[in-house]
Image (cartoon, rainbow, N blue to C red):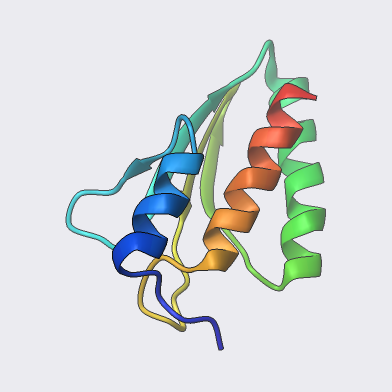
Length: 97
């Protein structure tokens, strides 16, 4: 099972993630992705879902037209883990590519 990030490891991980912010009252991170249109937003979600499935780590997310809101936290660990950081990094990569 993944272990929660704490101390310097947590600070370092959060510093690497541009655009992501800590969710108030939760040990989780959140980002809003804006795309050109619904098709681009939904395509991003499909590609991200395939990566998440391979990682066996699934996001909390919603989509309204061209906006995708994502929250990441590892429920089994009770908070933010390296799995969340890896998935966030992959989502960032997908969003620009």
